[in-house]
Image 1 (cartoon, rainbow, N blue to C red):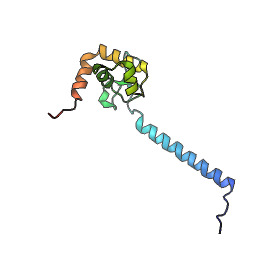
Image 2 (spheres, rainbow, N blue to C red):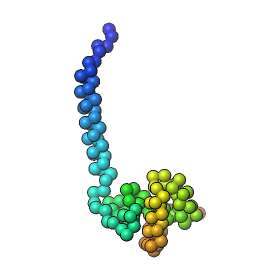
Image 3 (cartoon, rainbow, N blue to C red):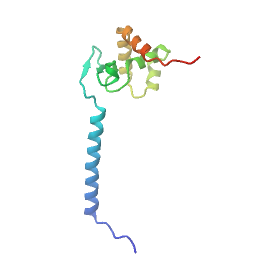
Image 4 (tube, helix red, strand yellow):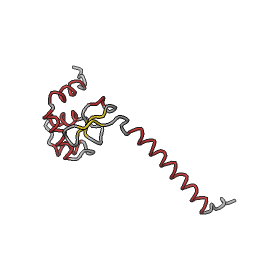
Length: 122
């Protein structure tokens, strides 16, 4: 016996229900990934601090990428354009600002680099 046809109204109701469920999931996801503590602005437009992200370490605004990650690429000899290829979620303006922040706060960022260094076995 062939399956009975599903009417258009039933399909529309199911789609509407799915859309509502998707919206609820998106809202839940956003509430989980958005910072629950306010940002602390810096003098750099693309660098901020959020206490719940890396315990307030300076990050590129709108990301979880620490300034130290950009600085480490720079220290390894990568040009800003190469850093953008390796960290494709960042725009050049964000990379240049992170490098400027590093230059203005070198001691602080070097501390974070040292603190997060992975030991190498000999």
